[in-house]
Image (cartoon, rainbow, N blue to C red; front, side, top):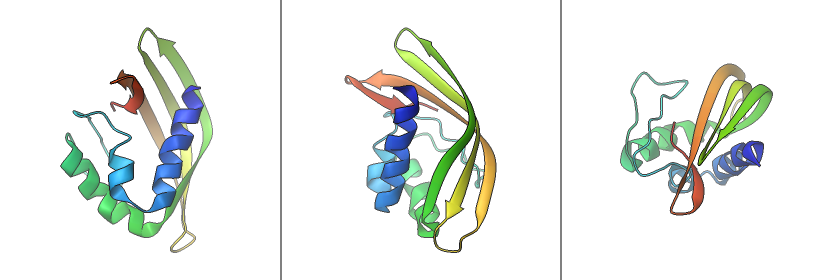
Length: 110
């Protein structure tokens, strides 16, 4: 179930709509983007980041990950790779997703 949450996020990326991607995050997120040095801590700033990032038409694939589950939270961390559909470039990076339930829905907190 936890890994499926990444697939929901990846599917949101595929829409090309930054609003759909930003809605995968909690109301008060902490997004530390791989390709930006500016922390994003609210809906508007998360959406702003994805406005630019989605122009590259990214699609992610987890190469190696570790899942931990607690009471009302889950984390998934490891290495993933993005293929940028706009250029064909591949970018490998570390990742961490911390998920919590907000209004009964699993969302990305960090």
